[in-house]
Image 1 (cartoon, helix red, strand yellow):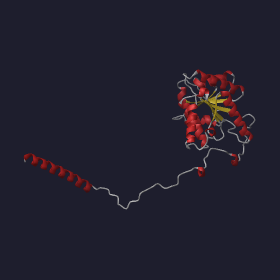
Image 2 (cartoon, helix red, strand yellow):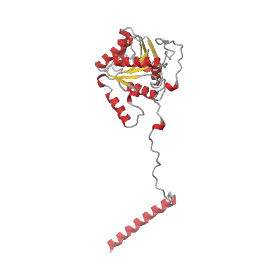
Image 3 (spheres, one colour):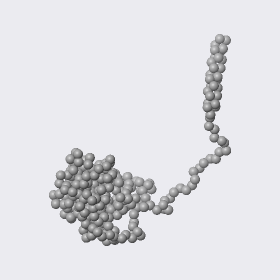
Image 4 (spheres, helix red, strand yellow):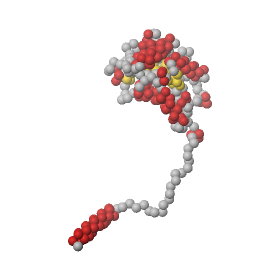
Length: 282
């Protein structure tokens, strides 16, 4: 299985988060799972890659060329894919396409962007994210604010589905990985596989455990339970807006009207000044 992991790359990341990331890296290696990530050497990414490397695991790093200039890639990663682009779109797409699920560790705006890009793509059945589980590692309640905001959006009828339909939440790395693996095994049992090999030709193809790389799986559309909303279930207000009719023709002043109005003002002011002068002389 190819497990994509997002998380911080800042060297100032809290040690508690780095430790949990290290544990996740170890678990991935011990279970023979491929760790697909942004290839960072610091923060949660660094802890993840350190843990995986020290346990002789397999790491695939996908990094933007911009970050290679700063030597921010992890030195132990053998499979390093360098992508280009004006932004991080191509990098995110490569991460999604070459993994079967997503685990999100604590991180900053880059991690938030990756998380919600994946969540929105999953909800819209885009970027091959339909069947890919997404799980947050909510270490020390790091993502409590996100969860609360999503719950508020659902309560206010902005989200079409409950929060758990968009992503799952666990307090630690082990439970997050267990949940993702169980979800993927259930998909396989139903004849649905998120992905059966790396789609990026820059990464050597690795077949999934127990699944042939050249096999194809027919999927019954009736068994697909994605997040597309049902337009008939939306309680929309179909009343027409209240408009007061008017028989009066709209008036748009011409240049002549404007000039006449200004002359009237000038004449009025002049008469007023003359009357004042006459009164003072009298």
